[in-house]
Image (cartoon, rainbow, N blue to C red; front, side):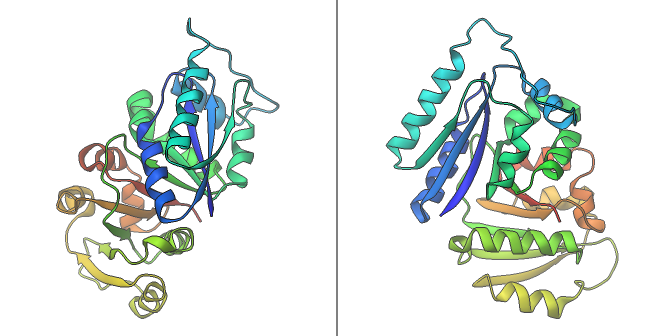
Length: 270
């Protein structure tokens, strides 16, 4: 059983998170812990969380309906009960500084990617990168509307970050290891996959239907186009690396992947 930590703010409820949790729970039982931040803008909440301020930080309600968070909690509980998902709830005066501790005692932090990008605007990538690196567990970005993965795509560039993400995903989701899995390497240079014998030895131990693919093109320009042909996939990536992985965290790369392809995105930092 895995523990998933799902973060909601008081103004928003994510059916996408619940649907992903349900799909996972049908494969193997999970514990879903819902953290309900006070009803403030997501931008303000994340600013407090990422600001590194000392001491406990309470965020006051700023709308005219302080009961909305209770409505969303009730909705969360009802969805979990209907899907037979074991759950826990953290409510009301949640201290945002404790969110970091929550990730220490969770296997996976789950965020709604559309909520993140729609509310944080051009600063989304900076917030996302900071969130990932403050988190003490892997992060999963889930679109509100998506197809549960029918295949896995692992972004690989030979860096420690990309290999760590592969291992973390394999350890957390062995029940998905029988899906078709594509390890993709992209480079503008005419070079081979880095450390191919090593990555073959490792990945073949975890993924039953494994294929390696070299995308011979500029990843920043064409990776999204290539990805558009891979419907129903889940993308696995590290957060720092050489060439390919580092490109994923520049400009609007991740934003476009989520927006254009509605793919769940698993990110692990080393």
